[in-house]
Length: 187
Image (cartoon, rainbow, N blue to C red):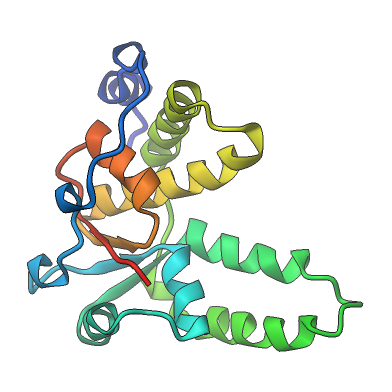
């Protein structure tokens, strides 16, 4: 792939986004697992791994994951891996929390990991910056937002359906780039 920054800049159109976006009602968002096309591959957001580890994934999401080709986004895996470093080794609860994270990461097939392309990284950084500016996102939350945008655009680029519990950020991203495959859920 040849990196084309001018095309990325044209697609993201920073000057078009000058006002904050309003959140839409739940009924306007993609919460229907039955609407996911039968042949669609899935891409999991970090929320899916966390909710799975806690036993909080809704049955329709569990069923989709069990019956579809599942890809794993490098940004989501990195968020999980960061927890390994964040957890205090001197805290008595750390070992019990680390084990399922490490087991989850160890089970991910390397051939199913999707890494954001150069175009996705560039466009993702611009879109995350636009949202940070227009929505007043605090600096502390901007890295998390960038990871969400990277997963969203990776789904767009690969044609996968991004599954997430993060309806707030994905509502905004779907307003910026309608038509990207997303399935939202509530615990």
